[in-house]
Amino acid sequence: MSRKKHTVRRKPPVKNFLPEKNPAQDGVQLEDRVRLKPILGIHPGVYLAGFYSLVLLIILFFILIYPGLSKPGILLSVNSDPQGAAIRVDGVYQGKTPGSIFIPRGTRRIEAVLPGFSPSITEREFGGRIFASIFFPKRESLAFELNTRDPVKALAAEAAEYAEWSFAGEPSEDYQIPQVLSEGAYRTGKAAADPETAAAMEQILRAAARFTQTRAGLRDLGRAKFLKDNGGLSPSPVSILHSGGDILAWLSENPGASAWLSGLLPQESAETLTNSAWYQKEEREASLLKEELPGTDGGRLEIITAGGLYFIGIPAGRFVQAQPFPRTISFEGVPAGVGGESWAFFVSTGEAGDESWALFLKAYPQWNKENTQDLIEQGLVDSLYLNQRPPNTAEENSPVTGVSWHAAQAYCRWLTGLLAPEFPGWEARLPTEAEWEYAAKTVRNMGTPGGTGENSPAIPRDMPGGYWEWCAEPFAPQNFLYAPAPAIEEIGSPERPVRGGSRFDANAPPVELETRASLPPSSCSPFVSFRPILAPVR
Image (cartoon, rainbow, N blue to C red; front, top):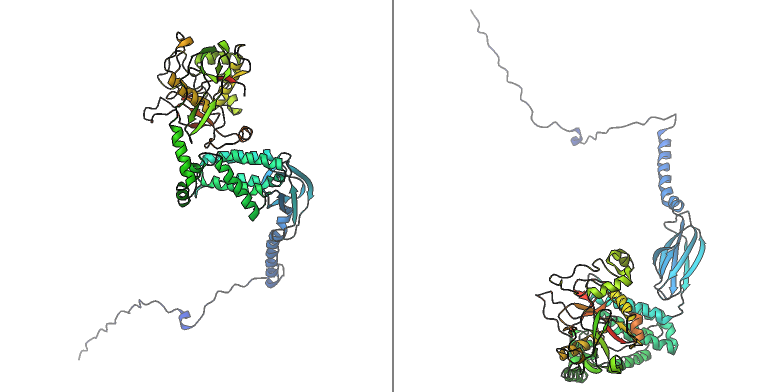
């Protein structure tokens, strides 16, 4: 009997696709242990403690010891009376008083410098602290007392800087204008105890007011007045009343002061001022002045020559200078010229020309164009000195352009030496703004010359609408505000007036006789020339 063979089929093993169990999940914590071996027989606990201690000591060394060794010195607190002095250590500027500065160890020269004051200098030996100098530096203090022999000149120096800032416009979030005038009054305030000095300082402030054309400037001017009147200290109620009375008296002495203030005060205050009887009275008087005859009809014409230029006599008279506020200006006559007739001054019938300028350069070759770089280094011209003039002006003996105010002044000094003997005590110079405008209005009223100048080739040119022409005095935006001439000259100005206007810009509006403009005295432009006058020495 046969048996059937049975084949047993086994199932393939089922693969487990689940991740293997981590023994840690069952509460078993696995660790990798590293056992340090002794080094040179030293147990690990010992040499690790030594290593960490060494690291700690190095850190402490660089924090507590190294700064005192690498940069030894002291922290010096410096002050001065008056404050605001620049501090120099061995000739290097370090800051202003009051303040603290680091002084390296050794013998140091400390200098306190303040414009208008004599420098105060001390030389001392300074040490230092080695341990913990970062946290507990060695401290010392030093005080300087600054003196000035001429407090008026010191205040004038600050007023000159105030004048420079006046051309920067109203301050904004991007920049602020420093209160330089009131700082100067604070520093020199003690000297105001002397009545004569106080009076001179008052004149400086009045001259500075001619540059006040922003609210920030007005605040600085007012603060300077109160500080000056109170000896550099904060004003008391009595001094406030005294200063306020002075300010009101000064305002009443200056026609146009109400219009000037109305442009500087906040809107609400300005509206109150413009509705006041004071403001309306000044406006009525200004309107009446504008109706006066501008200039004179000239009368008899006399023309003289000097340095290759023709000069026409401008008689005595008066006129209304309209800008920036109308006011009457008078000119007295002085005997001069043929027949000894009286003239206010003589004005060139045109700008200084190429031929006359060539004669000047022959006598003073240092003003040649080849010397431009030397003149620039002296601050007398800029890179456009004697540059090419505007197009279409190549006529014979055309006006010289691209001259700075300094160059024009040098030319006038040369021309003074050429005056004929019949003009003793006279000089050639640039006109003042008032003289330029008076001459321009007089020449316009003359028309075609007659009398002794009938056959003369010197035909007076209408002065406005041609080149801008340099004028003599420092430019002040509010020149109608009165200040004594010495104070005006002491402060000076960063710019000089130019009058006349340019005919070369067809898109520009017409330039009137009264239009005012200004440029830095070293500026040279192909649109700027000059027209000298002959006048009695001032």
